[in-house]
Image (tube, rainbow, N blue to C red; front, side, top):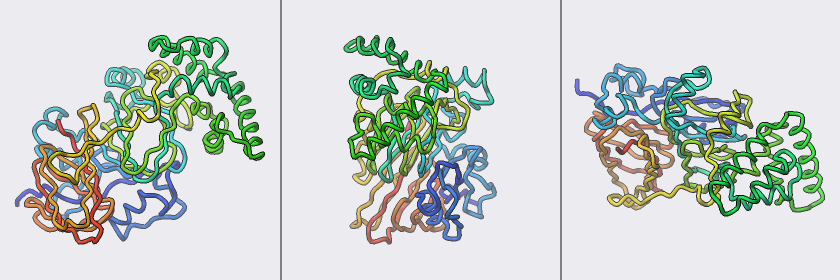
Length: 422
């Protein structure tokens, strides 16, 4: 029988505690859209939808003509589906994991190692760092999405050191003065910033808990009296402290940029960039790895020394953290998010209401398509039958396959497609 090379997937859901609850979660809405028989529990968090072949959440193939039950098994049998370049470069593995995240409470302050550090950490501590790969990742907002990303401009950090005495107490006079004196010298600034951040992260627990309690009490009283708490970043502080009371990560808001993405805006997180997702829904694409170095806002394993050593201490404004998309020159419906790593590229496909026939162009690598909004019937020479598409449908498309969509929804379609354009 002819090989089916385009097929729908049923994807793994992760119910991490930080996820949005029940149908308040974009993940849950997409799951129900893709499978109307799925049962969503209103008091359960639906944090992540994993679209890919990761062993901890390998997608199930929704086509009973295919002998293999999971995408990982199918790719192992037919590695040619990846496209020859991807197959050779990534040893017959799908190089990316595509996700949807619905964030209710903050994820840990973390960074991902580059390949060299990942190999070293994996060799030394395999129980905490399970593979030797890097883990660059990109988040593209589906709803208003908040995160912490990269070190703030020095002027902003100095402002907080001045107006938040509890923060100044953890950093100390010497390190704070060094930061002040380093202005204008990039190398000295990075060194001083590292010293300040490391001092704070290595503070004795009793000291930082006392200072945090004093700060929270002061900001709460100021807010109750109707005062402006912006100079203490009061609103975000109280939100994080409510979620993670007594956690050193609450002070990280004075070092890291607060980035707000509107739908369609993206943030790229390269190696050694400190970050934490705070709230909202996004699609995310990443290299296939589980290597995360954490240092706060988490009950998981914390590795403060590794994190403080590895970070990129280059300050830059929040606006510089928004990763631009580029219009595809050959298709006006496609915006490309093409990060400076080979592992993945994401396309945002917005088909206007006036278009009823749309062709998903063939590319020389395997891709995963997620339908966010709209309805269509998909046909492909190698699908061997029509595939209905609706919000939540996930489609695996082998390399060099073209897919025709007959759009039936009145308002067009919105889709994301993850691939690896070498």
